[in-house]
Length: 203
Picture (cartoon, rainbow, N blue to C red):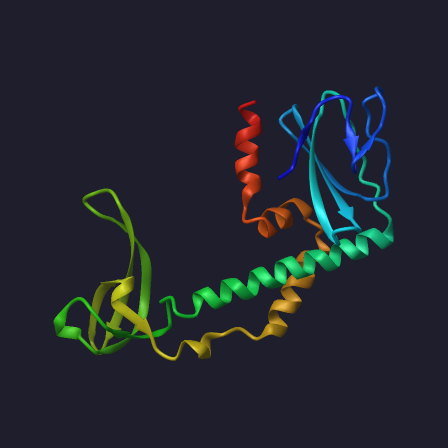
């Protein structure tokens, strides 16, 4: 969990003095401001072999993107790993989920179509009377079009929809080249940065 530092500032665990300013450091990869209150600094840690987020009070601190080429190369390798794993995980979770074009079998719901097979032509969320959202799928069965809850259909042969890992490698490489460290930190930590934004804005 990042720490919100007050003056005097800390940079990479070192006390800087009462001057309360962040100096150029070859491990600073990115800097961003939130409102006019917080300074977000992404830094590389050789000890942990990862990119870390540190949060400072911007009234007392300044930072500069000044990472060396060697540090940036390490950070890009880390970025590639984060995005590659995220892409593979997303593909894995989507294999058995109905989507347009997939062939499915009806396993529950309308008895008229029990056991029938068809192709998904529509997916979406529907609001119930109780205000709850649930996923629905439209399936073309012969000349008929029928609608089911997502849980009432099963994808047939889901493995054929698996994406080749080489495609993920290309995507992850292209994303890593953009050097978006804050998004990657959020991905690797389960998206907690969005919560931090809300928390710190309330301080």
